[in-house]
Amino acid sequence: MNQKIIIIGGGAAGFFGAISAATHQPQAEITILEASKQLLDKVKISGGGRCNVTHHCFNPSQLITNYPRGGRELRGPFSRFQPQDTVKWFTDKGVKLKTEADGRMFPITDDSQTIIDCLVNTAKSLGIKIKTQTFVKSIKKVENQFIITLKSGAEFQADKVLIATGSNKLGYQWAEFLGHSIKTPTPSLFTFKINDPRIKNLAGISSENVHIQLKQKKGKKLEQQGPLLITHWGVSGPAVLKLSAWGARILYENNYKMELIINWLPQKNPEVIKAELNQLKVNHPKQKVTNYNGYNLSKRLWQSLVDYSLLNNDKIWAEITKKELEKLAMELTRGAYKIEGRGVFKDEFVTCGGVSLKEIDFKTMESKKCKGLYFAGEVLDIDGVTGGFNFQNAWTTGWLFGQHLISSI
Image (tube, rainbow, N blue to C red):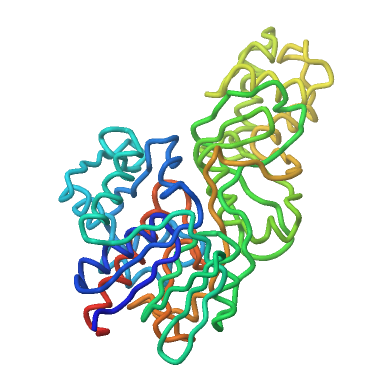
């Protein structure tokens, strides 16, 4: 008798799980149930509509360092299916990927529809049934069978169920009903809302190498270094997004109201900066401080920090007091900014939290609490930083689910 497999969720993890299942167990009857009209909606909007498929990091030990939660658990799975395998899989299907300077990988078409068409067409060619606008109301296990009841009242029976619902609350509820504990879902990968005169009216200005840190009294130091972008509402950019991911839980616990320490010149020691400012005072005594920027900073950012540090922004270098010079040095290297909330990261979003990883067998993605139940993708308490890492989690965990079916018949 052919196995009946139900995939709940028509996103990246759901589709890849279904395709992997059909590839490894071609006799199985596989059905994807998606509540909305749109399949693969996150794939559609990822990377500004280009789809950041994965990241050019082919070393599993290095790859896992990009996951604030779940990295340790993914070490084994990545030794079996990693970005290199993802690239080969899509290439074999006729979809070539390219690598950008920062390691992100996109289809050469720069169009997410290329990835969507590949996944949907592959699923259909394998005989996978795809049902949209199919709202699952409940999942129950009766003896060795799962009963999936729809909002319409219709029912599906399944031997195995893969929950790949991303950050949808219903996925967490079904997991909890079937015996799992849930780590509180909170946002990850977001920008910081900051209302501060030092960066007001500087929207669009960026710095390529900035060090930022969340100020806290105890606990592991949370810091990042990299590009930062000043926006109309605060700050964004790779450094901010990465810090928001690693600090997702503590920021949530503090209601997104914490102090952010910004070092605009991390390549130099603060004492060196102070000595260099003193030297500027000696070498350019008659130059206006706001007009003479001795560092690789935007002119407008330099002027804003000078205005904030000096009692009179018309001062020449010779007129700067020792106290003002120390204030300017501090603003350049240890400026404190109040985070007043979180902003969005375009239309993309990632969730920290989900099904407890202790309750999952990462060799198979099967539940340790409920035999025949599997999880893949973001429904798990796994999240990566920006750069294609969250999709790689989806591809890998989905692939493992299907691959396991060979030995589970």
